[in-house]
Image (cartoon, rainbow, N blue to C red; front, top):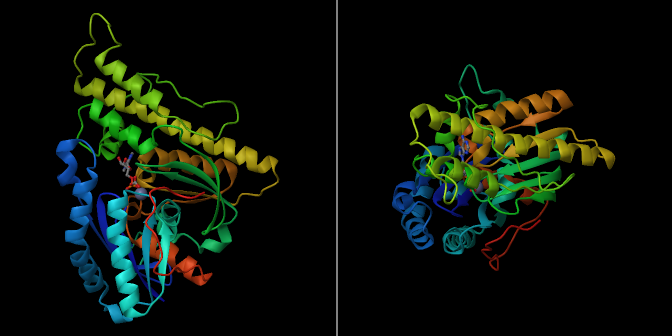
Length: 360
Ligand code: KG4
Ligand code: ZN
């Protein structure tokens, strides 16, 4: 079964070919970062126009890299929610046209849920002698029930996962997503957008105990998240409190690295605490969690990867992390989850709608 996946929910235009839900034959991504950089964030109209211009060449490139033709494709999967409505419409319209003209099933896939599938993807013909440990992930079905955490630029969500397609929401952010907090902290520290990876790199050079930033845990037992206070704390450290005199000294390379490290310790600390809370809650409910599944752009974060590995070891859980190329937005995760939906008959017709918000 060969699925063509399309992804246009935000500022990445992507197409991928995935065989049998796991083997990634091609994964082509055209980022629009350069188009939005001067605005400090994604401009929706610019994003949709760029998707329109880029999608067909990207699909052709994905077919060429996979060495297949459209006639070999068994189904078309498309990220149809959540995201920028104009951007989603480009992908959804293209997917409908392709599915209709080829006479193959159309499968709408939730982008946030697909991030949790990314850890099950494998690079087909991976000839590397030392594959990353996560490329040896076992087949999905031996790992459920699982605790899932999606950490991206737009979402921070905890799920109980009973299968790749059966997710129950346990909690989410009440303000900024963790990736958004990373990007805003990066801007405050003078790093270019999107700054998450740059804060991560800088944090590794700093002393994470030099600044003790607040961690909002909301309320005892709460599985929701809040990151806007942490972001504001970094802002006040760098620019001073309103009316503060004298104003703070200008940042040096070393204070910038310490601030990044302190921010990262607090942000990742909150994620780990919430994972622990969710595991406690599920255990009290008698649910025997077998694995921890993490996905989304921030799952590329070095501290999250190592702290989550420690947590999984302590709690005797399998840890499923995407290979780095599948952490941020891509269409392989859409095709992969599309295969799971196709397997259970969850296909769509031409009434499939682009929707700005996720469900569940
Ligand atoms: O999943 P994604 O590509 O897009 C959304 O669905 O939002 O996530 C992008 C987010 C950005 O906020 C980016 O700064 C963040 O993921 N990110 C990171 C790292 N790599 C990407 N944040 C922290 N550390 C990283 N290494
Ligand atoms: Zn995403």
